[in-house]
Amino acid sequence: MNLAVGLMEGVESVRVELLGTFTDAAGKGYPPGKYHLESEITLIPSAPEASFAIEDVVIGIGFHWERKERQVFPSSPNGTRYR
Image 1 (cartoon, rainbow, N blue to C red):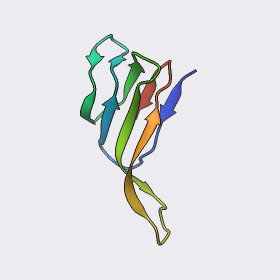
Image 2: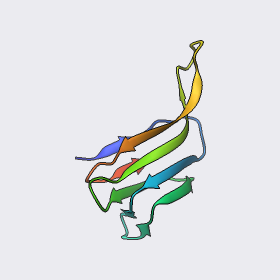
Image 3: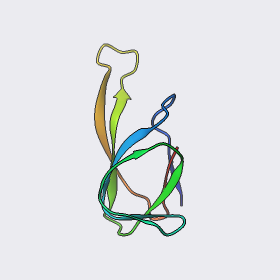
Image 4: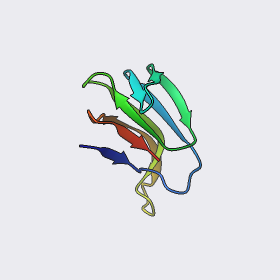
C-alpha cells in the first residue's frame, strides 16, 4: 500500500519533521529531524512506529476558525510521498 500526502497546494516547499528514521527510494538515510523539502520525494520508514509532522497546515479554510497548525501523521510501511 502506498500513501500519497498532498496536504498543501500552491506552495513551493514544505517544512516537515521526521519522527523516526526514513530512507528515500535510492537508499539514502534521513535521520530524525526537521527538513525543508522543495521537490517530490518518497520516504520509507525504517520502523513501523516512525511518523512525521508537517508544519503550518492551514485548516478551516474560509471559516472563522481558519488557522495554521502542526499535524502529525503515522507513516505507511511502503513509503510516504511528499509533493
